[in-house]
Image 1 (spheres, rainbow, N blue to C red):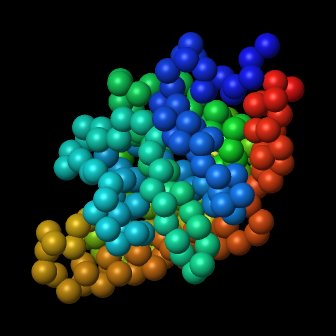
Image 2 (cartoon, helix red, strand yellow; image 1 turned 90 degrees about the vertical axis):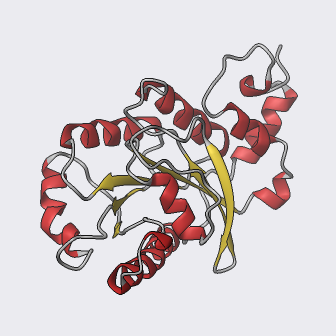
Length: 241
């Protein structure tokens, strides 16, 4: 009989989320029970890691300057907003041969099963890209997490969009729905580093993006966090039940 969860056993198979699961498992359950788990995910190079830096206001998450992946495994960044505690969980990007979709999907399922995912932020590039990849990524996410986990969209790379950033959504939402990509909510943003330009409009958009992303999280993590019974389940696992 095993007395430890599978992801803590020495012989467990390596997973993209193993280190994060171990870290959460060793945290104090009482202090951790009100922390919302928010997964930030998207195609490689779409700006998911940069979005975390935009939300927190700190350049703490490594980002890449091209389509090469910079996130190798699921990594959590603690964040407090309006008195609530969050883990902003950065994910390896879809589309990398080093992190196949099957591995990312498995990791998402493990995280949701063990500790509960409260929100998935699916980042999509606002510029012209591979629409099929966007649908495939959305389908992979939806298949990996519980039906009651909301998936919201953040549209990135809108720093040079000709209209207001949210205009992108009103123009393209119907197309997303036609591709069977239905989101609970959305935000339209830019995540480029402010130090890359002195343009006043861009800086205004960056400020607007930070505000929009934070409001998106608060709107969709307003109720009691999901999976309150998981603490009992964790105890059962350690007791071998």
